Image (cartoon, rainbow, N blue to C red; front, side, top):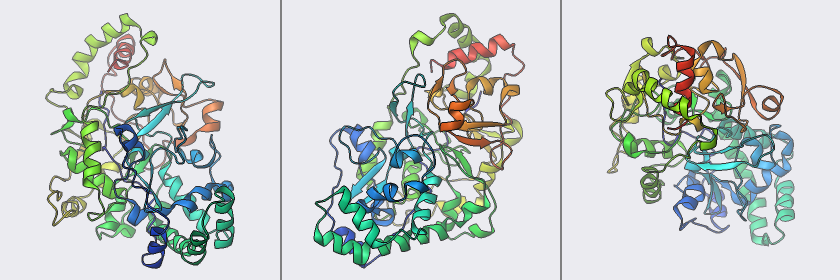
Length: 474
């Protein structure tokens, strides 16, 4: 039983570089809210990690984009940014979880990729779970939405300032002036630069919600020829729970780094921070918190005690050597010829990229030194595995039942629907509701293969079902 945790803080594909100079000065005049949150949970959800100076969208503009360009949003549940998978908790918060506001710009942070929702039934209210993979968040969709707005003839200073004033009548005359003269035009230019930077999207299958291509964007950042590269690195977003026992394990889906702290910084830089803008102290506060952050327990009333006990016994024989903390193989890389899962993510991280990754942070005490190239995928602990669906490194298997019974793995299913399937253990992935509210996932596309990881298939069906019952308790 091998399910892999790819990385703590993955690359955020929606990178928006605003024009420097006048536009930056104008944005700075709009005020600065540093998000120095007192509670660590609030800091995680809304606090800055340093992405705003380089990838921030002007705050007032960000607020109205999904209003003015509502027709450019996908037809998914919710309103505004929720239709791209952002999570709103209400409580008077002006922005979704995972967004920051500093220096008059909205950036993204760790929670963008590591906060999810779950519903007990179709009519139930969603529960927000911190540290859970953001299975509903469509990062590539966010980038494509921004591109679509900038290419729309309605993206004019007049239209957008009018929309801002309608939402915020107190928007000052000076702010209106700077937006009309500098900010809107600079943002449009920056988003068009995003389109150029992300042209590699068009050579690969869509990523869809809950997934991201972590390392291919680094190739452009580090001077490698992404235009000559055809690899598909799309992989599932991981959980952030229990990072302390992961220290020293080989991390990321392919086991290319064994430093939790280095992995976190690399992800923050991938999210848009630079070595200069990275807020090391803010990130350190999150790092310390996730060391012992616990996943929520599977509802006890839904467990079958007899199955749990039988499953524990079978698991110890069939799975524990690879996945239990302290076992010989946990955090070690399994050769691709053994695990036989889709090789695209593995192939996307090249030896050349590993070498380049170890140049990031030159001149800083935290310079990267731990990246390496491997030839397989890493075994990881299975804590909170019930909320880490879909499974395998690329999220190609919707439920634990389908993982343990490979003949039941669907060729097509729907991701991003948050109603839980308590029997099969995962999110409901088929049927009219999932099709209406989710996003189609086709396992025939490159990088989406659902084969491999067939360990335990020789066990009796009753034993495999018992393992699933036990896994609910991890």
